Image 1: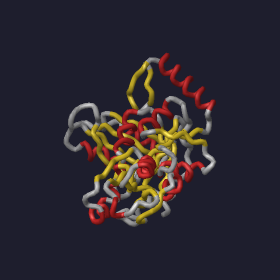
Image 2: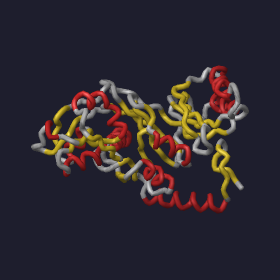
Image 3: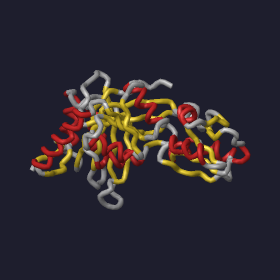
Length: 305
């Protein structure tokens, strides 16, 4: 038996591991530049792909976040891009849950400003709108505006903003909350622009891959920590960061999905796994937690609105 990761004690047979690796690598060679993202065309995830990889990227749209992870893990695509967290609404739960289960690594990150518009088909009047569709996160980012202007409208959750735009283009008395790109693609017009509740609204997307990212000199590392259910567990996790002067950039809890009321910690911190101080951090953490899952070391995004 071998371990799939020196920091993550999930076991499986060598034959199964070797077959899975060779099969996925063969598929990667067939489509070396294919990038999976949360589709359809016109989503903010697509905008994140363009910002990180360029507008000539070879795209593979997926119906949901789980499918993006699966495309990368099976080698169908070389990279995947999914939303990780929003500055207004917080973590994207589907992405967090996939990170718990998947073997793919975080290879990079990109942050883009999010501007929401109320989009409708041509000739649709504001007073006729009965339904407003968008992604759950986007509805949350416009919650105050919606309560003020359309308190009685039925809110419809879609898998993406672009799917909501598709719906608004075909359904009567229906509007979508989406970006300007979606408006152009699906021939919609903006009734009201910039309806997000917070002016400085942005979303962090992560780049998924089977490939580790090399040190850039300005990196971030992400891990999941399974802590023992004992008094002082969180203190013991944080103490090595203080002792080694490593800066935490984020820490949050999430249900472990193993037993009821068991939780894990998602932790982001500055540094790369190849750095000696980070290797020392892992040595100390392994002595005070039940399990560590390494998610990746990658260049930190340039945050500009």
